[in-house]
Length: 49
Image 1 (cartoon, rainbow, N blue to C red):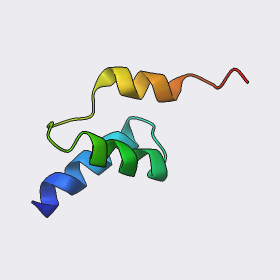
Image 2 (cartoon, one colour):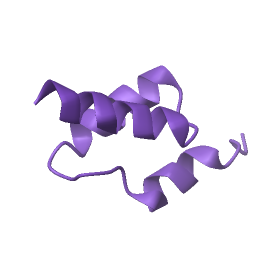
Image 3 (cartoon, rainbow, N blue to C red):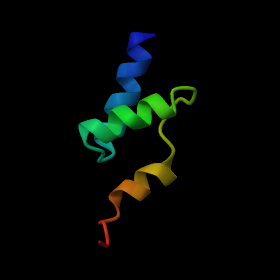
Image 4 (cartoon, rainbow, N blue to C red):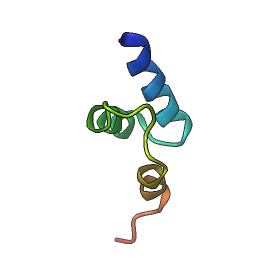
């Protein structure tokens, strides 16, 4: 179980999320094998504030 959690975290980090966002995404999407591409794309966009 630990290896799956680590693998999801590493995948999210490799795709460009920072540590805090990767931890949140892994917790939110723990039932899925990988983090959805749509979520990763949302974090890639710069904030328009």
